[in-house]
Length: 335
Image (cartoon, rainbow, N blue to C red; front, side):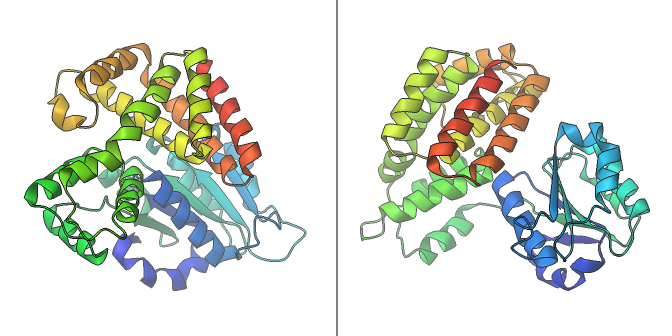
């Protein structure tokens, strides 16, 4: 069965009869939120505390296939449904989905899979729709054009100063990970909360670009260049501004995503200004250099480290979050 974002409400009634629920989106933050909602529907909000959730991440999924299949029938001391999380499954390893379904019995754990690979979706559909107990939920990237933005700005009670503002925000949305766009748009609405003046292009760049270009970018550059001194200086500056480790981690993830795009498409195969409108020319040249220094496998492993750390960060207080982020960066420096 296949559902799209707008049809998901019709799926929730059938959730308990599913063996595997696959969530597919390029938006990592959205995947985590939706996976948690579905987990709460299946097992209740206390399932984590009651040890009724088992998690596996990315590359360990293929390495621990036997453990995963055994986890289907693992029971907690607490009553209630079990949930098995496979976080960041790659398309080449999706055979595990049909293997879980073949083993699954009615009282087994329900498996929730998150995937962000969309390129081969037609082949992927064939492999997961062979069973009525496997559900694929697709979250296509929200189409953002001027008409959509006009409605979004109107919904926030904001006026805008001409089409150029809409074009600027649309360009930003096209070449920015969806989760970052959502966060930045929220900043925009807060900035204009008590301001009745129309939103201008200058307003947009004042809000979006200053921290993005100077602070976050310098931190990402230091990590990509494995410059420990600059990395530590950048982290200290961030913490002094009161920015959370989760926010920092999301930007690092976005920067390495940009490096992967350069690796995949080639440094000269696109119009740099369109592909990376918020990297200045010097910064784009740096990104191209970094892309040469990091292989796709290394970038993938950076993504794994960031994903695991992001999940840990959301469970602990700020004091422990900083320690987790430091450990994450140290691990990336050794990749």
